[in-house]
Length: 193
Image 1 (cartoon, rainbow, N blue to C red):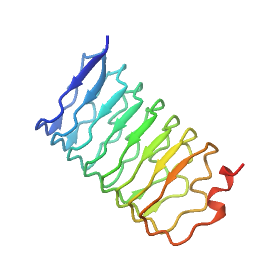
Image 2 (image 1 turned 90 degrees about the vertical axis):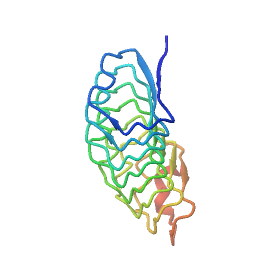
Image 3 (image 1 turned 45 degrees about the vertical axis):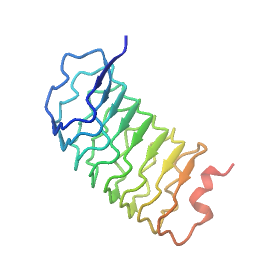
Image 4 (image 1 turned 180 degrees about the vertical axis):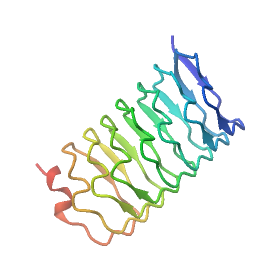
């Protein structure tokens, strides 16, 4: 039996601690098109079977560290179309099975080396339509399963030569509509076989 929690198109502003406590069979939560601006740290506590969370089209400005720590079976997370301007360290800690992460259409300006450190299973990462101007060179180092990386419509003007070389998979890179002034062979040396 699949258990879904669907609360899209409402006026929810806050997800309080332990909101879903006791709903152990819950597999998907859809909270799109609300007015959520805060998710308390233990909101998703003990949701061991949860595989999908969609929080797109809300008003989130930040996420607390360990927000999704108790959702270890999560494979899909959408935070797109919010107002996130940065990612705190350890927000995604414990999400070792996560395959798809959507952070597109936010206001993120910078990607730190540690933001995606624990996301060893991610194959799709969408960061399009943000305000990214800098991505540290080891930001995607641990994303060994990454296949699709969308960086379209940002403010990137320079890429570090090692940025994409941490991954040996065939990857689709989307870098359209940035202000990149040069592209060099060494950006992709480890991808060339």
